[in-house]
Length: 363
Image (cartoon, rainbow, N blue to C red; front, side):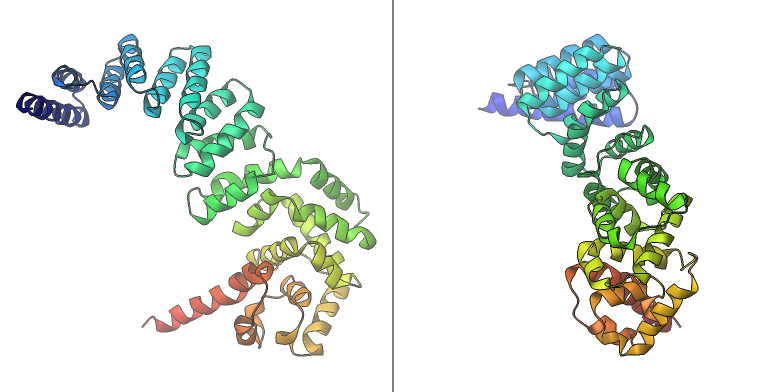
């Protein structure tokens, strides 16, 4: 027992010396200390082998790196770090086929590991196999959203115009809400990608052709946009950086304002209408409005107590006027609203209220 304890003490000391040397940039000394730690260990550690591999990589000794990582995998097949490092080295040597096999085997041992999934997604994207990369990228983003490379891979998919929107919008919105990525970094590419999608492109063509939108079909058209999670995510974080969307939003707002039954339109697409109202707010109501639209909204505002208006009417008003500018803003803030309306009330009433309070408190 004493001998084992002494071996353990030596191992720990050498490991620490190796880490200190690596941090100082002395990778030759680091490799020497990691080897000593392995030699003095009762059982060779996969983590120490991975540290040795990292030092050897810095010393440009790739074959020894591969040897150390293979040994780590043999000792601990579920050690994801070794699989990932091995694949990265193989890819760096131009052995993409070997790297693919390594990552596939690694994910068999450690299913859904986010780092292995992310490395595999990046490799598949570089090999121009984006369809295969997407499920691995989703897994990586959901399980490890704090890894920058995963967002870079997402950005590359956007740049090449390849991004299914079934789950991407929800993931993107979560990342934006938690400040894991900057909206300015990805918003332009997302807007381009969305503008090229068949359903939105058809709507834009209809608008740009001067035909306007058929009010009788408006609810159905809005219901399609309601299902586009990526569009809703983009609209939630800032002005959409694409002039084509500004024209589309302007025409949609006009059609909504002039529709006979606002309630049925709101029921068909509550989230999109809330996003549209918040887009108008974020762009400081710069969209062009016709006299009939303005008259309709003014009639609604002056007809009765706005604080008692239906949710559909509140959203329509918010598409043209900021809710915090209304005399009944406090009553609107304190009223109980549905979950669908909460993002609107928060952006247009609650947050401006707290900003005003903070300014008032500043001496």
